[in-house]
Image (cartoon, rainbow, N blue to C red; front, side):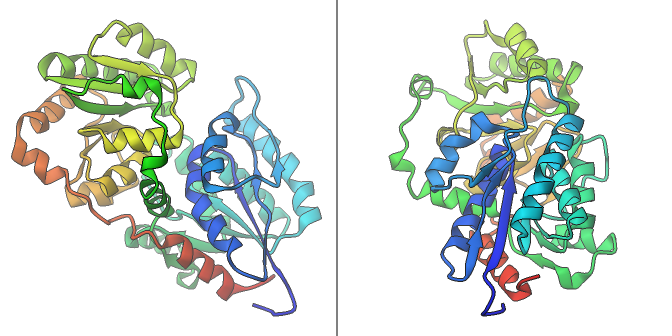
Length: 375
């Protein structure tokens, strides 16, 4: 790094998962003299981010507040690009940092490319090789990946994906996933978390199953099939399901219609990240279509059943701690009930594994940025 020039880095996020995974990087950057950090939020999930930003001690310097009711991905992308362009022209950062595969990430990468600002992509190289699953995330991350100047791959497999696509190996570094950094910092302070009343009221005498399902590809029949599977699981097993329901009406409406009267299923509003970590810690196993939960479940030693047909995070499946079950009720009920009734099978899946990192990803990312220096 040029000693006469302050390195200016602009981390940009729009959703809660991005904020969670970039927070360790932001705080690591702020500990280093000679780096100016300008944090920008696009506000794609504005209402869900405040508690986690408070927890990590981060306040955005710039908030675009792009989200509007019933906004499409195209609308989000257009708003981000139009509002971000003059900010990049004014701030002229040496690096923009993005994380993952949201519409914010794709739109930021395109805008930064047009502005000739270098892009660092955190969690680079994840691929399902199916543009419809997850939608629109697979296309978002491919576009961002081919515009990025530095690629922070969470695993060796992610790095290999990038190299197969012709990305320069010198620009790809395996760092681990920053979700592990974030999770470790929260777990270290778990006793400080004030548990929400709805969580403290959960039954203490039953095994808890945590469920999340919110992806676009599960709208319609798939979410109704998932609900049918959940009914089958609680009727066949002595368990209690806890389901924090995403506010999107395409999820909320069918879930409440089909599950609200089930006594062994608790439907909750979305939880803040800290309460959610507490719930994961206290769950027996997890059913999810979320990418982040596949990573966190593996770290915590919780068996994860993936409610999708494919995953871009195969490491946990390969390690035997996660299983892809799709959305067909019979498949979900069979696989979950099998693990619930077979203690040896459960023990085999309920193992903490470090396939997604060791908690030092943020440090590696910051060192790579320092090594590549100013524009």
